[in-house]
Structure formats: C-alpha cells, structure tokens
Image (cartoon, rainbow, N blue to C red; front, top):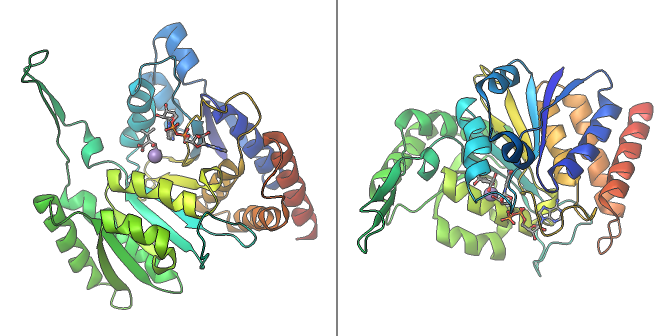
Length: 345
Ligand code: NAD
Ligand code: IPM
Ligand code: MN
C-alpha cells in the first residue's frame, strides 16, 4: 500500500501524526511519502501544487490529507489552488461524509435520537466549478457571478453511488437535498436524475427536502436521515452541521472518491486547519483517524478499517467527554486500542 500524505497547515500536521500512528498499528507495511504542500511552501517558493508533484501523487494508492488554509495566506489561495485543485484533477466526484452519533457521545441536541447518516456530496461541480467572474470591476456597478455547473453526467454518477450505498444500508432510504423552489434549472435536473436512477433501485425509498428545511430537521429530527445526496455547496454546509450534531467537527471524517478508481482517492477530516487552536495540542485527531478507516475500507482492507472504527467507538464510549485529553493523548489511546484489538483479533 503506497500512501501519499499531505499534512498541510494549522492542526493538519498535528492530527495526521496521530492518524499515522494508528495506521502503523494496523498496516505496518504501508509505505508513506510526505508532501510538504501548503502555506509554508507557498511562502517560500510560490508553489501550490506543481505538475510534477501532481504526477507523483497519481502514482499512489490513496492520499491522506490533514487540512489546508492559513491566516498568513489570502483566503482561497490554498483552498482553491491546492485542495480543490486536487479534488478536480483527481476527479473526486463523490465526497463521502458519514455522520454517526457513537454510543456515549453526547451531541448538543436535547433529544438524542439514533443518528447514523451518510452524506454523499457531489465533489467536482456546482458553484465550486470556478465558472464566474467580475464584470465592471472597480466601478459602482461591479457584478460578481459564480455560475453553478451541474451536468447530467456529473449528477448521475454521484446519485447512482448514493443509491448503491442506500441499498447496502438497513434503512435503504435516500434524501435529495436541494433548493428546487428557487434554483429552477439545476433543481429540475437533480430531481429528474434522482427519479430516473430510483427506478433501478425499487427497494430504496426516496425523499426530497429543501436544504434550508433540512437544516431544521438536522437539529430537530436528525434520525430521519439515512443517505443524503446533494450538490457540492449544500453538501459542504450540511456536513459541518451533521458533524456538529454527532459530537463535533473533531469526529467527522471524509473521503474524496474517484469511484472509477482511475485516480487515487483522498481522505481527510471534514474540518479545516483551525488556526484558533493550532499548535496547542487541542485538536481532536479522531476525525483524521476515522478518515484512515475510510481509506483502508476504500482500498479493500475491510478488517483493519473495522478495527479502527471499533477502537474509536470504544474510546468515545469511555473517554471523559468534557476533557478528552490532548491530541497526542487521544492518538496514543487509539493506537493502543487498535494494537490490542489487533493482537486479540
Ligand atoms: P475549521 O474547521 O478549521 O474550524 C472551525 C472550528 O472548529 C474552530 O473553532 C476550530 O477550532 C474547531 N475545530 C476544527 N477542527 C477541530 C478538531 N480536530 N478538534 C477540535 N476542534 C476543531 O474551519 P474554519 O475556521 O472555517 O477554517 C479555517 C481554515 O481552514 C480556513 O483557511 C479554511 O479555508 C480552511 N479549511 C480547510 C479545510 C480542508 O482542508 N479540508 C476544510 C475546512 C476549512
Ligand atoms: C471542506 C472545506 C472545503 C470545501 C474548502 C476548504 C475549500 O470546507 O472540505 O469541507 O468547501 O469543500
Ligand atoms: Mn467545509
């Protein structure tokens, strides 16, 4: 297994260190190569993602990323030039973001129901496509556009993936989130594709919700969601919320998948570089550790993936929720648990 590792900025390197510690316990033979992409490299060389590095990344089985973004770099430079460029170049069309309330974890909701959902976020289109611009710049009549691109091909492949996942889950329920009452054209295309693909999956029940209403339900009745499929921007927003209701952003993992497997998929916590807590060992590395589990699962290493998940579940059920320990302490605990699970099978 050849893995490229991009620790990135802020808490990225802190949580990646712990994730690699845990990986070392389940896959001691994994070969990892570090790539120093991020703010420091941009400052010293002006480079974000050189072609040669992109070529090298393509030679790996998967990529593990911490986070990018730094207050010393104008907003968007690293996010678009590095993270989004990777997602687009490597055709990461499915952005998979599970959100589950683990036993013992107390979310912020008064009535904690069972929460176990997976958001299948479209990863290469929508308003993220970079299709827009400024007209009449620096005049009083300046116009900014950000055109959302939605292709039938792009929607169909992510919707198909979401139905496939729904079919594998006990509840077999899929919810499309959109804003069809306003976004007429994209809304109509998304709805039609969901309807068409649903015919191939008669055992999956289908619901639709406007994304604004879904933010209400995510807080008042999150148990209603099973698989959610949605566009790139709605998916970005709803997965910070799904993370918040399942114990916080420090637990939320994600995979940027090229389902065709032509390119390596990339795994990363949902959170960012958290400059407010960087360098203080306050970051919870659990999201990065669970991202390693998603990575292993994607590469067919189901058993080690399950072992990591079981160790995280045990730790979450037994940790002092108010004081879970430092980044290193949590990483050490998880590595020890995975190691003892490995020995006992
Ligand atoms: P953020 O996710 O970095 O932080 C939001 C809040 O969550 C902060 O209060 C932070 O302290 C907290 N938090 C985040 N991760 C945590 C963890 N593991 N443990 C405990 N608390 C945690 O979002 P932001 O502040 O909006 O963005 C900061 C920078 O990160 C920006 O430059 C942004 O563009 C970038 N960003 C990058 C990614 C990525 O690389 N995938 C994702 C989101 C944001
Ligand atoms: C995420 C982040 C990114 C996104 C940013 C940093 C480009 O918020 O991974 O959720 O919007 O997709
Ligand atoms: Mn986000």
